[in-house]
Image (cartoon, rainbow, N blue to C red; front, side):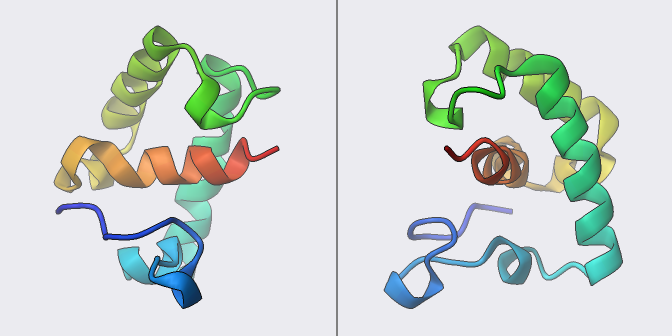
Length: 91
């Protein structure tokens, strides 16, 4: 599944809401969100936004996410994981 077009979390400005783009039920969304936050803390520097993370750390993070979250294997480049991390690490 390809990522949606437009900026994340800006549905009124030509972007999209991650929750709506995924179409998951609320329980699944929250469960994945909480677990992904833990993976972020394990592999990324939580003091920096996602776009400023070390590229090697991001690669390790994405590899771990793909292993831990089978549901994300259907999404091109695990884009939901990147979006969850972007929102979590927003400064």
